[in-house]
View 1 (cartoon, rainbow, N blue to C red):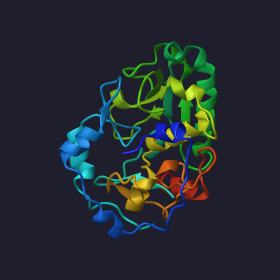
View 2 (cartoon, one colour):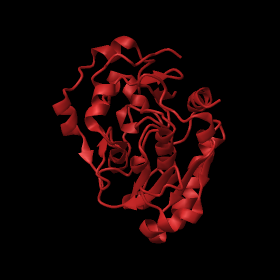
View 3 (tube, rainbow, N blue to C red):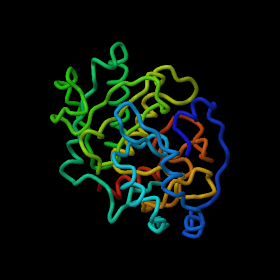
View 4 (cartoon, helix red, strand yellow):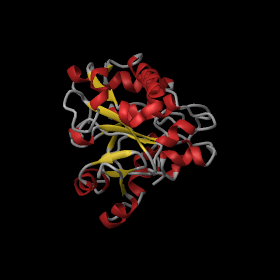
Amino acid sequence: MRKLSMAVLAGMSLVACGGPETMQETSEQRMPTYEEFEASATKDVEGVWIVNGDEAVENLREYYDATVARGDVGSSQGGLAVYYSGGDIKWNSTTAKNLTYCISKTSFGSNYNAMVTAMNSAAAAWEATANVNFVHASSYDSNCTASQSGVVFDIRQVSGQSYTARAFFPNSGRSARNVLVDSTAFRMSGAWTLAGVLRHELGHTLGFRHEHTRLSSTGCYEDAAWRGLTNYDSSSVMHYPQCKGTQTGDLVLTSMDKTGARALYP
């Protein structure tokens, strides 16, 4: 399972991708055993499991049983794919319009202002196309922790992690609802920006899966716990470039990303 940070470290080598996904491609992918899946996951500084490079999971066994082991959920029916497990994993309409967050002044230190600016830019991209609203509750920035109940999620800086940044899904408990940004994110070179990385991570917070999991031929298949909102999009903001993605610049929302986002949050 490839990590988001690998694209930066590898200089974003890109390979052209194939056509739309099919159910046959998904079903032919061999599902890993739980032991194999556990070996591919890591634990981060919060003590939660990190799977698929940048997704936080509180209970690894439950996640495996509900997603990886099923292998029968992926659907090519009408470029985003939403996390699906007995239904779409998304925010209700009320919460979606009041996704409050804090940004830790303590952990970011001198990077705090850069983080505020990048987060504003990333949030604006999703807000411009879907009926969602991210609200920076700055009054909590001095006490921005995983136990801060005054916000929906917290954003903090970490160091020495395997990812550039990691996020969560709407069904995560409060302690796991964090966007953690590694200090290396402020030293990236190449086409990617901090705002671009955050656009990808905020996609997860809204319930969107990695686009490359829809095709086994990407080499980065993860599981079948998704429902297609549009056709497969190799340029999606949710697609890793090193998984045969075709987005050569910064991570930005494509026209199909926008169509899918509006479909889930009309």
